[in-house]
Image (cartoon, rainbow, N blue to C red; front, top):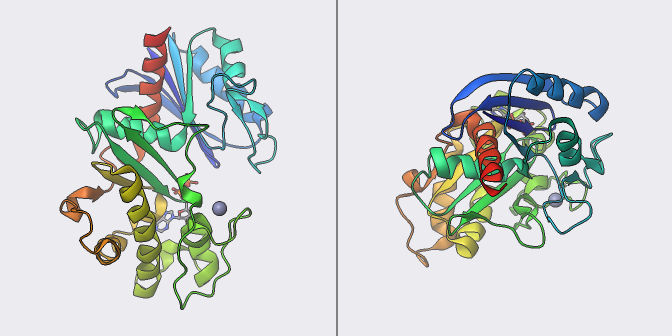
Length: 287
Ligand code: ADP
Ligand code: ZN
């Protein structure tokens, strides 16, 4: 039996199951402060005989196994979670192998193993929600270098008519600053889900996301692009993404049919938690 944690900024999802994506039990816990949230996580797993745990976490996190802060959540502005020893806390409670990666890397792993990119050796998973982040599988493995990628914070070219300042606390008008759910809400004065009929909202969103996807395509050349997160429930963004991506790429590289190339997650909202089960399995195999 494997344990999985999808640690998000608003909620933790915990599940037990197997590497085929079967989930036998799951719970949701609000993300407050570690002293409150983590004991509930531990209580849940104490009810199940688990052999390993996989964590897909909000970040930034330290995934460098050589580092003395490996397994920590690092520079998050979220109160109480900065410099939190996530892996160490679970290892102390369960004495089982613990796999640790970002939420989007876990989702990418879930999608390449069981979802929309099943059978491929590369894919990109991007979430557009409270924040923007992406993870990539390259040559069958999660892409990692000095640390994990932070693809949500790339710079994009501003639309000439867009005067919104952007809301990334670090970069103001990076991709996340201009195109996250909270950026949409602040720019247009209402939540995305209440702006369904406003075409210019979704055209601008597609304009920024297409720029980002162009860069990911040119740098990583993924075989499939999976777009998840709350904002991407707005299906009307997709035609704008396709149109602007075609326009920006301008036939320089040959892309597959975009409606099959850029898709919603095959695992729906379970990409992250099922990916965390696979992280747990990988860690068990290593042990
Ligand atoms: P999180 O990123 O916190 O895990 P979500 O992916 O649901 O959660 O992202 C939340 C953000 O996405 C909020 O800014 C919210 O307004 C926006 N959002 C959620 N659902 C929708 C929707 N159906 N349409 C447009 N925006 C949405
Ligand atoms: Zn940023």
